[in-house]
Image (cartoon, rainbow, N blue to C red; front, side, top):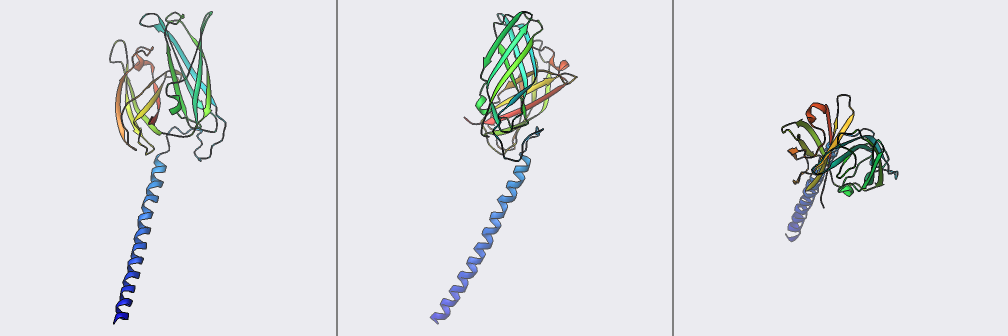
Length: 258
């Protein structure tokens, strides 16, 4: 009788083990499918020339594609505004470690060197484009003068970090006599959470010529895939009636945590 009971218990244990193994295999298969779907949806739209294979080189390089500069009357003196559109034309993720802007007008030349704000978090992938903009007060260039800008950027290789933020539905309105407002939608694409972000926007005329850039931060917590709308006043932007002059608008966003 004892042998019969032991044999029965052994059979029960074998069935329980088989059932547990089958259940574990099914559970393990679920996240594999989800990861594949998330990875496909995480690829940024701005991928022209981008290395999406995941294997990067060591050539850190940034190329200035276009520039724009204006001198205008600031609060107490002439203010120089300078902006560039640039591209990561190397083969690895980069950050801009330093920038050198030289503005010229007639016989006047001014040079301004700086490290872009929060540059260590603005990681640009190969083939991606972004923008820089600087306001330089107390300029010796007269307001309204025609300004030529020469820009030099220093790039260094950097590991990937943070989340990519898609910027779309961009719209400019001249709601006030002295400034324009910019509105749009931000979408956290990569499935990563972020509590801080930097958004860069470039403006183009009817001939697709770069005319200026704007950047800002929307201090809001983003979950992966979450969308948020924004409206921001562009105080200090030198182009008046921007809605009439900006035929095209492009943007890119970077999300991160300190």
